[in-house]
Amino acid sequence: MAKVKKIINDTENIVSEVLDGYVAASMGKLARVSDRVLARTDIEPGKVGLVIGGGSGHEPVYTSYVGKGLADASVAGNIFAAPAPQFVTAAVELADKGKGVLLVYGNYAGDVLNFDLGAEDATDDTGVEVRTVLVADDCATPDLETRRGIGGGFYQVKIAGAACAEAASLEEAEAAVKKCQANLRTLGVAVSAGSLPETGEPTFTLGDDEIEIGLGAHGEVGVERSKLMPADVLTTKMIDHLVADLPYKKGDRVAMLVNNLGATTQMELMIVTRKAYQLLGDLGIEIARCDIGAYFCSQEMAGFSISLLKLDDQLEHLLNAPCESITFSQG
Image (cartoon, rainbow, N blue to C red):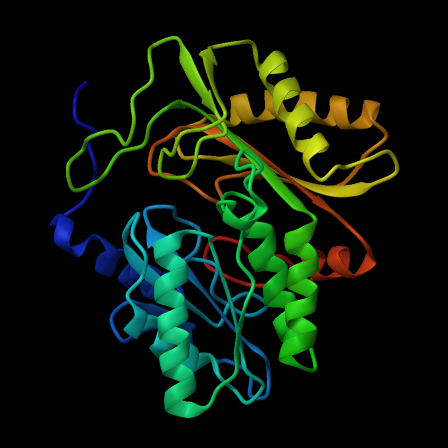
């Protein structure tokens, strides 16, 4: 397989140059702090702080979702690698405006270890109270405790941003985000792999006529490897798996995210969306909101994920609350 072409400079500088790009595009609303932290320059005093983050290479998650109504700071690791604890510490201390700090990031062992260490150091340094709600939406992972955080992380960050902006306390914000976590499920499929920019090599291999259902964001093994099938058949398999997992039921209202993993065309996403609407409608599940596009990528991985978030009045309000960032804003 030929190496993947990338429009980059020195591979050692990829993360740094990505962060500089966000700062440049923000028109003064973002700044780099402690090398790997991207932070708001206008955090409101007295709010609950929100820090997100994870390995780079999945843009726009998590780095770009920093702004008013979203995260106060994001911590960037190397490509597909957890951020170092000292940068988590710096982000927490910066985001602390008197009501404590909530951490939201994907449920991966390295991230959990380093975020925990960084949070502990921040608490030791300043006494700040820190709580964590992991993104753990991947229903291809049977064990609820070890579920990976994938595309639905966008919804969890969005709700966390609004909750932290509105909440009177850290406990109140945490409770809202935990409710989101409990009602959020995602399943992905890939038709070709992403690559590591440092080497140009794919993160996994698939045959020319193969797909992988339920794979992780870094190419972790999924629940089924099969032959390529028509979009309607594939979407049906994915919706069946998603709906059974929570389970979602007749009368539920959901937000649906059809997420581009990096190299999938809008044409393909719309064909999938059409079938998903039909299937959920047949089950009596109402789609109250639909988001389509690149929200959680894995370099140039070709494929998509579908996320469903069961809504109540509180979650719907928080999901629809105004926000502003480089890659996602809503009034």
